[in-house]
Length: 303
Image (cartoon, rainbow, N blue to C red; front, side, top):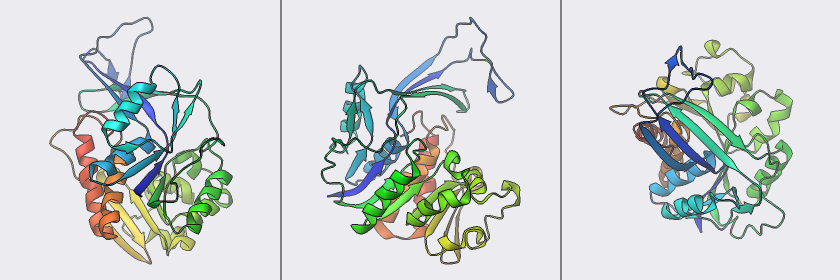
């Protein structure tokens, strides 16, 4: 029995941090033909599905991960990393000619630029994956998977509903920019929706600056989600949860020093889910999300 199954990406993350990296006007400015020395290098395994899975497992829960790993030279690194973090691999697809790799350039202040490559894929899982134990869980987290069709994701969520499994959905900016009529069905199938403030503005087709998050923006902009739980993270401005006309707020928490901003949003989600599994209390869940996001900001690596 799982406490959580996290569905999403699994990537190999290569971090480089160097004083010689030219950084100006919030951009790295690297010369063509230039060669730059990195003082620090860190290798990790990340991806939205992985980060949430590992974060929840660190809080003492039994977690399975549903995603893809390539049958290539990086496979052993990824598999060993997940095993070391107590993540079940029984739901994972292993595919030939599949890669998911990120190179992450870091400034001394923790700002980052990500160069990412992923082999195109359009399915949650292969037809040969038996998905043993998929329904033996309390919660399924469906991470941001814009390449997977909405139709397939909705079908997956409806299947989970039949088995009385709580469904937490994260949507990225690509999905949130879709027309309202396209995105409505997947929103209705979520028990808990998690987005950031800018994604919410894209979702409701309103200017970010015009949205007053301290008010009941869900009842105002998406009234058919009033009975659901909607969580909006808003960076340094804190996070909010909305449920049945009530608004819950949690201020952002910062570490002594920010080393890497990669994965902070996933860290919040992992902390939120961990407390929600324990208490179902939105105030406590928001606080645990803020605490774990701060922990992620204070270290290099997304989990």
